[in-house]
Length: 447
Image 1 (cartoon, rainbow, N blue to C red):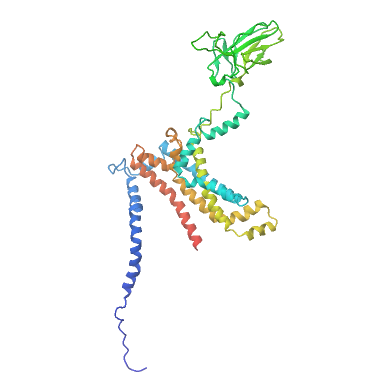
Image 2 (image 1 turned 60 degrees about the vertical axis):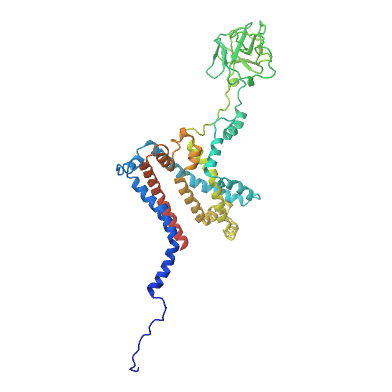
């Protein structure tokens, strides 16, 4: 090696230094991230910090420091504990049920020709806002069968087995008649052969009087039988109760029964168009004349879906109706990606369709099922709009959930922003474990 000195060449003129290169690299990234970071701070971080601080004060301002009192109220107030219990029901039932229903729909639609039409119909409710869908279900849940579609369907089936009585609203017109324990109407006094039984009724709707009804008449007595009349004991302008008068119509088609002293049925008869009936060939003795309870059977009044006892299940049904389409479409997409070779191999090995479904299809769909389940889990924790749309004001305390309790406490007239903020923080704490679970799932899939 020669003794000549070695000198480093100076950097080329205009070449960027190390710090300048780092500034360009991170500066450009920061420039593009700045708008997103700004909105993240303004709309997420700042409101979250503000809400946490607000939860430590009473009322609508920062006047009186409350500490953890608002959080204690969460578990001592009846209204808020009901909301927590209802949310627990939602979490325990809805995600699993909707996921299972979506899986069932996705598997079955693979085997039918009109699967596209079926998927469109099932998915369609998700295209409508939850509030609008809730209003629809609230109308369908109306208790009167002539207004609510659900009770109208029940009434059409129930009427086949327990038909409405022909005189469902009728009542005795005089004190000579009395109502029996079973719901029928009978004469107070006993009758014998040769007597005439007069069964006057009132409170009869005009629609319940058949078109064939004629002027009521009092039949003649029979020595070897018992006669009588069933009529509408009412005429315009008034009248005498218990007396057959002009302009009072007979009630045809009414079943009248003759009972002995032990209450056993001896005979029965149908009233004619003028309301008359007769029991012929009756042996001597005392008898009771009555109209059976089936004649006065009340019409189906409808199930109180919007009542305090059924309001939460009713809302859950409407929620399932909305989200079943989402679960079906997502799971169907995952099902389409499954290798058909594994399914055919399992069938070749002698597995039944149920075994193929349980041991091959479901395990391969587990990542998709997890996505659907976690998504629904987060949604039911913050469910709000469909509850306020379906539940009437009178039963919102019974249908209360955490998100609705937060809104009602803060903006529903109470204006207690401190307690409302505590409810919001509590809801956020409940969601955090689910978010962590979801993030870990993303990491496992990315690894």
